Length: 97
Length: 343
Image (tube, rainbow over all chains, first blue to last red; front, side, top):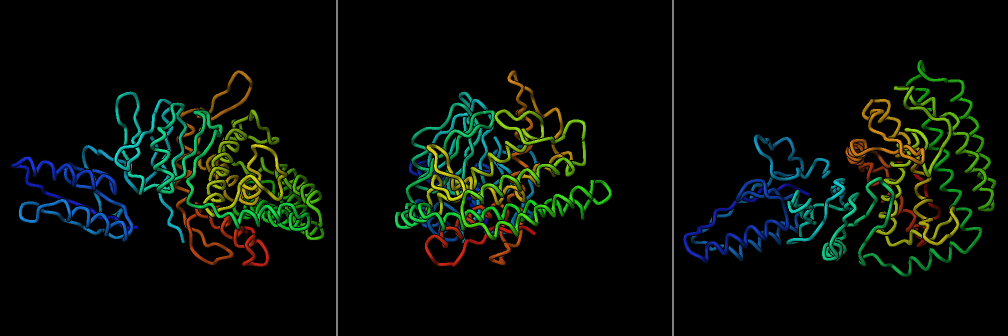
């Protein structure tokens, strides 16, 4: 398992772009938690990463959108700092609701 | 080896779990409190009375996420696990062994040897670590009685006498249990094991931790394809998960008892996190349950070296590894079931 941060920028000037934005967000939701509007933290396996990457590449428009994956590795917890409002449950700590 | 993923604990009494886009959504009233992708968790422990949607349960089975339901007070209700691990040949073998008296007694003896060995170590550890604070004489005496029980069990050839020795050993062990409690002696004390209902705080804590441990064991057994209801040490009884109780026995001292004791000794849990109910039973309250669950999850992530595999694994994987070894033995891959000897 490793932590991959997915960041995207989808051009929403036309309806097709807004549709792509929704689909990208939806695909990311399946694999990770939304930490900011267009940033997802995904704690996933190598095989799941391949699936996610392909799904996203199928959705986006190469000429208009941008997609970035930051691989933080398995020991990621020291590499992330959080300030202000937190909108997700951190994947490495105890999840009690 | 399987990966250990996070567990989602839902302790909000009025929470409802539902499915949305391969995520489990925890909602309280109209508000969604959390969304967690099913891929990133391995089990859900739900202490709310509202429950979960069937759609979510179906998806959990697909993803191999086990879901267990408990009453808000911590009584186990039921659990759900998918169809991915239904190894009928293994289970047929398990039933055949369970019907065979001599096989039964030898497996039962393994469980009990593990239990007595680990109980003994819990006592020995206390004399070593806290020699000035504990009644060393009593602990040493109880420990030597346990040592002789270990010898005795080697000559046992029927399950009945194995059970006899097990009962005797449990008494011997619990006789010295109060000595292990080092802090808050006025509020946390142990005279004897009481359950249904637990009559004091220590018993309440032990009962709750045992519930957690047996849930883990049951999920582990089901996960490797064994039938948790057909046991070797515990006799079959409708609705009783005998095999998971068998497995719990050997893990109880090292995983559950020591965990409960350390919660008290480090003052992680305080006397006001319990409540007394009309029937005289003592139970953890909401705050207390949260403390225990958080600490339990933390403990599950601590690394140990498994004595048989000589491999580093998190504590939380121990039930799974033992279940796997049991399945290997039942299948005939190894000559005997190696109980978990904690060091």
